[in-house]
Length: 392
Image (cartoon, rainbow, N blue to C red):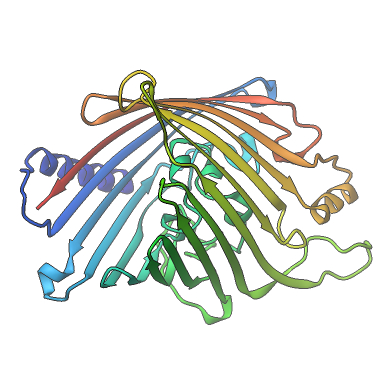
């Protein structure tokens, strides 16, 4: 209850400030934003999982111009507080490998990001602090419309680590360097390999334990003159991980390197009198000896302006293919498996007035959890967003 009260008060303060904000032409020293997101979901098509769930979260961000405040050119400070209500939808109910809603998380009110960035000219920047790697790495602009988590960050990467990598809903301390040369962009980051405290998932825990190791990640992007974009990334944990299943049942488990890679592309906008369309595709790989998902392929198309200028509609496909070591372990337990889990998604995003957005969403899930016994089912969702901003 305390967390709910804190979130509600914070939201009310920012809403009041947003209504009192005045537009100014001077550089903005302080920028505040608050977004409340609520999902209602109904699972249908599989009698054993015909359940509903309500999810919501509150995002509060603050950005400060450190140059104006402290006289350090190129300095930016950023803080991000996050509240999630923690209602279960996927775990224990839908039980998919990829999830259904990108706001589902353990109930908590936590500091999500808190970093400082120094921009040295136009080419180089350095960021350090509590950092969400998915805010820059493995982030596809054209895929931002979709609600299924696989289109926000590939499940080949999001599944990894002892408590996930440094992404929603728990982040870790890290350092990121970025260099931009003409149309090329390269970024490198080193992060604590275990975000938060796995034993206390509903608390903010910022710690650095040398025994837990590090996560290294790099990405190279190229943007064409037409604004199309291609990218390739590689990640690796410094510590080795125990393998899922040996070839022979009596063999001892071994340890192996936990690493993987991904590639993506997104098109330029195809503009017509009826709006603009974009397409994207992504593929990713992870070591199947350690991770359940060995490779992933996702693709989608979006169309903006199909009715009004800001209305969007999109269709996406996500396929998570499991590795043979995981399937072998399941067979030894007498569990039948499939090669991959498929999720098809159709969604539409429509502003209602200045502050509210409505987004109906339909997902069709086949072979959930890559288990043969699971029947196909539907996830029917409705998302409501309310956002406000304040700048001085």
